[in-house]
Length: 173
Image 1 (tube, rainbow, N blue to C red):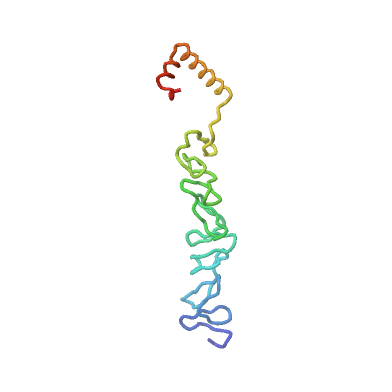
Image 2: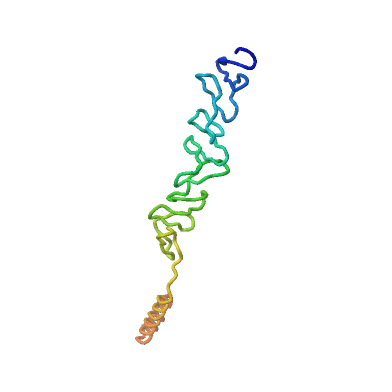
């Protein structure tokens, strides 16, 4: 060093940071061992070990594979608490947290707890939203089912089958 405020090269293990040589560089800078200076991290990084290796991100950026991104890729969500890109549930294409899927991957359907290939028995696959929806019969289907049930009951009653079945095994009705 030339004096207390200027230095062309710090001693081994020390790094120049604008005003003096230090053992550790300040936050948002990294140690350039070749030149023995503290260099700025990218603007998105809060902490880094080199210009291309972030370890934590500034607010509004999210860590993914040692880089700080302004948005996360498909299948990951922006965790504003940790400033990281975190995984969605399995087979989930887009989500806003790790507990709920906004849109499942192709051929998967949200069943209320996760994305699956099939829906529960009382639900149908809704292809556009990729969700399992309650099966609701149209009025025409309900009328047809009621007519069919009445016809079968009438046929069984007139043939005596209902009374034979009732007498033999009441749990069948």
